[in-house]
Image (cartoon, rainbow, N blue to C red):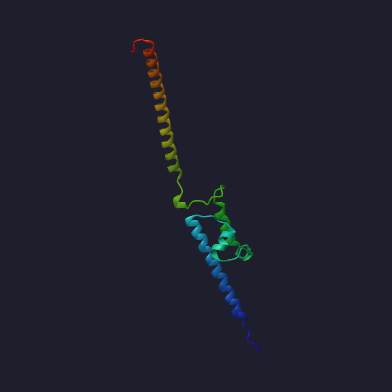
Length: 134
């Protein structure tokens, strides 16, 4: 009679499952830290598991985490930047304020130059007509 190896097979299957879960968590950690496209197919490929594994009810927490990361990505389809590379609201406001100031100064300079050009063109016209220039 053959020996019952089912306990060993079940243990090996459980170890493979845990290793797969660990690999998926490592990939999700990397994506969360470094950014990148978060899709079921992409995570499955990078972690060496099947998409079916990720959709299995036993891995609902993994799929929820994956979908949470995917939900943080911008609607443009481009991957979200990692947290440490994102600009803060205060920094964004500072940049906007600086750009507005630069824009205002350029508009003022353009207006001044237009006025100077108008005066110079008027003086040139007067010179060509023989009028004395002030």
